[in-house]
Image (cartoon, rainbow, N blue to C red; front, side):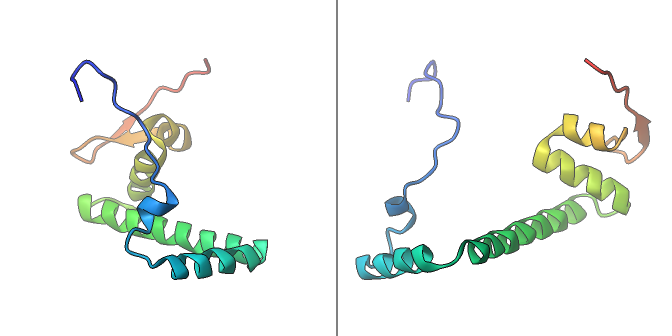
Length: 109
């Protein structure tokens, strides 16, 4: 790719790209399984995966900021997942890299 060409922001792999190491007959079994699973069970599985991702991300924040309070860790988690604007909207204070609390001015644009 040439430097002046924009990169594609979000490339999501295809089913085939994700399952290159899966035998075709297993692929068929998996697809059939998920077609027959009730919607509530699919949502339950997705919810469990989401909780796992949140837990692992929170653990990452704890490792990155070992001296942070629970409130600071929640701020860092929201900042990591949703961006600083969202984190500052939820917590009207932010923490610098040194860990000192700083007021954040919120505006109603």
